Image 1 (cartoon, rainbow, N blue to C red):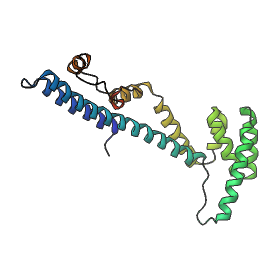
Image 2: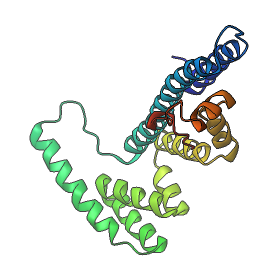
Image 3: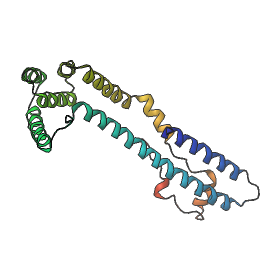
Image 4: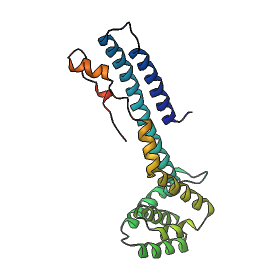
Length: 206
C-alpha cells in the first residue's frame, strides 16, 4: 500500500491541476469557475483529512503494538483458560505493585528480586513503569535478559524518536495541508454568491 502522505500529495497535485484548468477556461463565468473550483477543493480537502486521520491512527496502532509486544501479557502455546486467567490476575497485581515505585533505585531493587525469583509478570510490570517514567537503567537491566527484548525495546525507542522528529512532523504537515481558498472563490463568497466553506473544508494542521 502506498504511503498515505504520498497519496495526499498526489491528490493535491491533481486537484491543483484541475483548478488551474478551470481558471484558464475562457468560456466559463467567474461564478461558474468559483463553484466548480469550490466543489473540487471541498472533495479534495475531505479526502486529505481522511488520509491524515488514517495516518495518525496507523501510527498510534503501530506504537501500541510495539508497546504490547514488549510490556503486554502473552500466553504460552497450549495455555488453558485457567492459566490465562491466573496470569492476568498476577500481572494486574504486579502492575499495581509497580505503580507504587517512586524512584529508579527502588525499581532496580525490586526488578532484581523479580529476576531472582523468576517473577516474569512483576519484571514486565516494573519495565513498563520504568519506560513510562524514563528510568533508563532499570529498563536496560530488564532488556539485558534476552536479545529478543533488547531488539523489541530498540525498535520501540527508535519509533518513538521518529514520532518526535521535527523534520518528519514538518513533512507530515506539508503533506496533509489542505488546499486554500482560491481568489475566484473568495471574490464570489464576498459577493454573497458562494456559500461559506463546509466543515470538511476547514483547514486543520498537525
